[in-house]
Length: 167
Image 1 (cartoon, one colour):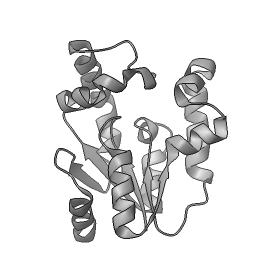
Image 2: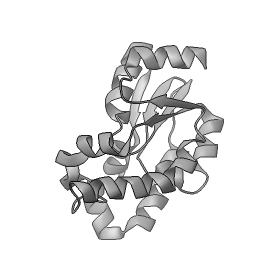
Image 3: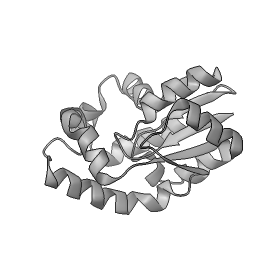
């Protein structure tokens, strides 16, 4: 089974994904790393050089043309589910999980990694929280199309495995 982890940046898709994949004996795939390898540069540089529209088109191509193994845990970019038909496509390919966290929790997690995140580099404190609240309001209609919505606050690979077995 392919498990797609979705949610806002900083929710733990990569960290949880690695642990979950190891626990299940699945391959772990971080689509952001695949994108960077194909682009030959980091996502922040790609964003600056080519813009968001070009990035989203490349992201879509990588998502839909990747040769996925039969069993994989896939960490997606925070914005990926919100463009084109990505949520519907991922729901057809496997299980989708929205790792949900509050704006304040996300802001606390993201405060020290703003430089590596193109949408956040100039925001901190209350401005960062306000930005996250605004973006989550836009993105939640897509995120909530996931087959599983999981509270990310105390989510572990063990708990995620139980949720997947139950769902």
